[in-house]
Image (cartoon, rainbow over all chains, first blue to last red; front, side):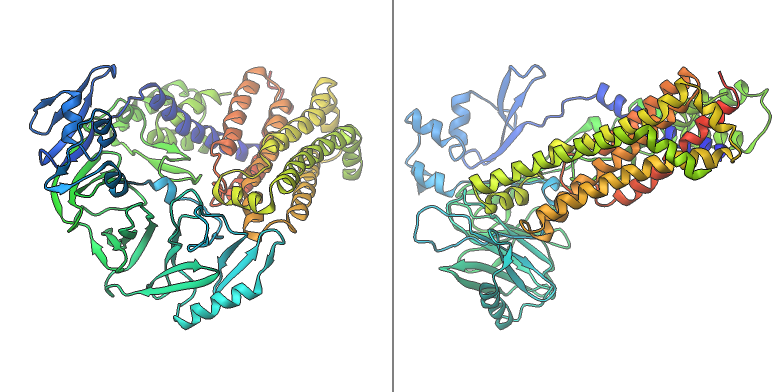
Length: 407
Length: 222
């Protein structure tokens, strides 16, 4: 029994070191990663960016060609983003690209959309609040019930009594049946909060991949099937609810294509950006009445695409590449792999082996020789063979416990 | 003989067991009072909204209580054995060494599991009329790693206390701290759902690490 537990303890110590040593190393060598804040300028028709130096004191306003701007000039070349500063300085032009503008018009048309893998890769209780979309009050209020989507239908639960509201459930269920919704529901998205200007309820896809829009209007269900191309298989949905009311939502399909569902005509329009996987990449869109700057970023790259706000086609694009990520660090010579349990890309805990490195083999072999020399006088055993093999494969992680557990 | 060993263990830790039960119940009651206050001062809907939109379970105050119970139980069960050299006597009983240690460890782990299951039942019975099953399972699954950490705490304290040398004790403490840290790495609700059963199995298996310490003790490692 104790022999078995010796091996178990050895494995446990090796696993702990495979987790903690790289963690300490990464903590000690942590570097600030920063890409310049960049937006597409409708005025110079190029990307304009703010470069920050190491000590974060010296800001350099520039564009892709290398032209340098003062802070005031920079406000002027990005009037849709810095319109409040321009209004304060009394410098907001009457027209931009021939279109008359006012501060309130710009405010209404501007939007910022953000999505992170961390918001998507998460366990979420499958209960949803359906707000009243056509309330007679100015402010939205949270409802007293939530709904759940079962295998066969929809069910509303009153939160005070914790009982199913059979009447309301039957009312919604009949509409779902009328519109031939195939249960169970695959994907559903909405913004169940009253901190917004208006409510567009939920967009969801049913079991056959059909897209629907669900709202509650004066206590009655509003359910509209949305006709989309049969080839498009929706995988992720975001209900936008921007002030400009031009879109119902953003969507991605299984091929990572990005779409906009326009309002009020429910057309699904493809946005001309590189494939976007919301489970792995961040996306930020700075939108205005003329263009959108779409920023897609993963660990290594940040891709910026300027999109025409009317046609949703690409105007221009550029990319930042994080060269540091490609460099071979000392870690790859020390550690044959790294064990971690959490990630910045999800809210799950599970063991993840990453950063496998054949470069650490040299150190592994050196450590194996040291181990054999140190223990040359001890007799051969299966435990010793197991430890030797572990050191050859796992290097320093297996070597340290072998030393610590020597009798 | 086993009965006598179990009775001896019960005599040793009965007051501590009661104390751990009282502490667990007190913290459970405190958390439930907080939930009751949210319902009476705001509404049940507000409670549901918080549970739906945040990583809050209202039981966060209990985070380290199962761990504390496990550590304390192991200390009270095994420190006297080592201090008063009673372990040596125990190992001379006409029973296999593993059977003796196995029944001592099994008794401790069983008492902890009983305590935790009863606490879990109380929490479930309190939440059942207030929350939908989806939210109850969210709360209980979020809390589960804290309870498994309690068993891990017991296992590593027993392993360390029964170890005869201070050098190895230090190593066992460090390994225990690192292993227990795993249960508190993620603060997100339901983060451990995918692996919690495996963590429980590994933790129960690691409770047997004490066999290693006892074997070293019997071998006279100094």
